[in-house]
Length: 457
Image 1 (tube, helix red, strand yellow):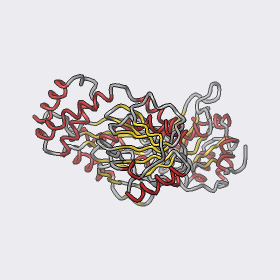
Image 2: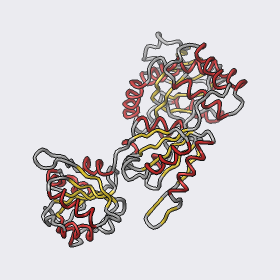
Image 3: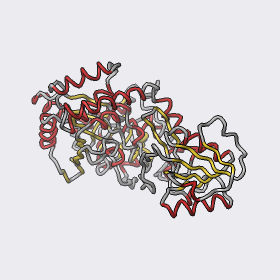
């Protein structure tokens, strides 16, 4: 995630002036935006070319004068001649922020694309570099936000004084407002007051743990429910494989606790993790227990659920995209395929016993597709043992490292290639797909994208 060159904020202009120098279409566009505020909007232009008559603005058809900046909060320069140059110099001498239209390098601030649900506004900015992209994002946000959102924002504003008086604790206030804006049952001020009375009486929900699947690591593969619960969480307890971009989707003031477990190094034991999330919930916290992939697939969620049940802590489970499914999507591999593969098996290669390998070999030989997790370091050994239990060396094998991520790598070959140790794995978690259905995947294009292949089948 890149660093911002600008600091996003809302700039107060009430009771002040917004001055626009220029009389053409560029000035008209900025005037339309400026008149959405409560500021007085003034147009200064030696020559008026656009029609400003439909807007509530003051128009002066004359050269710019320094006194035009008296009481000004902002200056837009849409004139690239002498008037514009004079206005820029005068504004900077007074410390008034300047926007030079279509010249990003000369701007002190940029005008974002705005979704207007006053008093709620959503601003989308690209620092002046890609305004068309900002408009496209704005269109998507417009479709997501009901016009009633503004009404809800005004209701929250009217409740503010009562909330401050009855709920002196900051955490309690935040929980009330989250309940207010998140409830479909709030339709009036009376509803909001009833909800406040319940919170003031201590009738709010106790702590809870949400076991959330973060998916394979790409932040745009996170579910909408996962995003919402991350925003509501007081504490985010996350595994090592969850990328920071996903963790940062949580509330800015939420506590973040890494309980990362890597091969050969466990900063927290599973027992300690169980104790931690139970304690946090019993303290009244809303906990997002964030796990890579799906929490119910090799996420040890079962052990955490047992601990939560034993302690009487409420919990929910939010599914995520497991790495094997991401690997199948990355390579267009139909892991179940009519007349080829009638099933899909999730299995962990690490620590697998002979009886398990014998069973997998029989299933793969019968046409099912295997997805082997946690087997990168022992891949040749596991492949050799599968072959020893009767799985033919010509069975197709496909491997995806960092499935679902931008840096994913692809390998395709056969079980025999894997036995021979022909794969030089990239860094990151790997999923090994074994079975005839692998041959139906689009591995040619996937491998070309990653520029990584071993012997082609």
